[in-house]
Amino acid sequence: MIDTYKKLPGNNCGECGETTCMAFALRVKSAKRKISECPYVKQEDEGSVGQESVVTMENNYKRVSRELEEEVKRVDLKEAAAAIGGDYENRDGGGVIKLKMMNKEYNVHNEGLFDNGNYCEDSWSKIIIYDYVRRKGDTPLTGSWVSMGHFPDAASHSKAFQKNAEDKIAEKFNSNLSGLVSRCNELEGFDASGELKADYVCGFNLLPRVPMYLSFWEADDEYSASCKLYVDRNADAYIDIEYLAYLLEWFVKIFVE
Ligand code: SF4
Image (cartoon, rainbow, N blue to C red; front, side, top):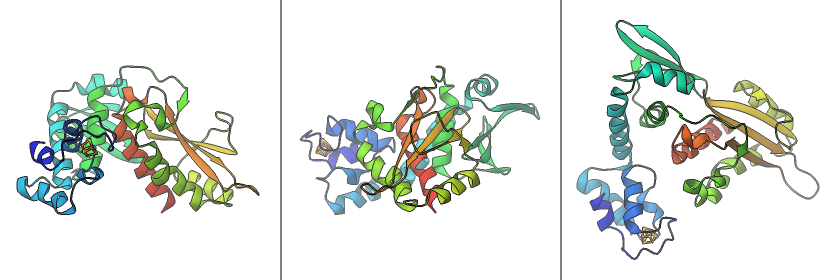
């Protein structure tokens, strides 16, 4: 974090969306921001932060996933499973939570995350699932839907989120509602018509207690198609909101591929 901070101008201008350079450096440390998001960091410094301390972004993600893995070692998995909608099983004297993230099955042991019987090497899968497990979602879902801009931690990135996620779906399926519906079905979306006002609404369980609604408005003579992604108002009780933004962008990448 100090290595990162030293590369920042220290003028606390707030243009990155954080109130101070120190707050920004902390976000970089926890892999929630990239140092390149400060407009005053010189390109050569973007790389040198990593080289000096061998803390590249990828290594940063690995480190955060390892830190969260340490926390998961101390979590009561049986209690967590009930809170987060996972299936708990006792196996060989140890507990395991079975859960799906975006239709893919994972097993959470106190020793770590497993996928198809093998230790999962993907840092982001581990970060998201470990965070989800350790929080044990202590607040009920409301059934009331909000966009990412509703959450203070995501508000400063809501324009980027719209560009990187919602607009990508709208562009890909502009004038192709039937294609969108087929893609929703392929990805095991569930019909959510009537839940929100839009030409088409489909629900997805990104994680058992992290539902998302995809709302789509068809193009007309005046406007091209548009899309909004909505999550439960209490989603931040289940997952860090910046990790949720990452998960939604990940979903969109799969959705439009
Ligand atoms: S934009 Fe850069 S200089 Fe300004 S507060 Fe953020 S980190 Fe500091």
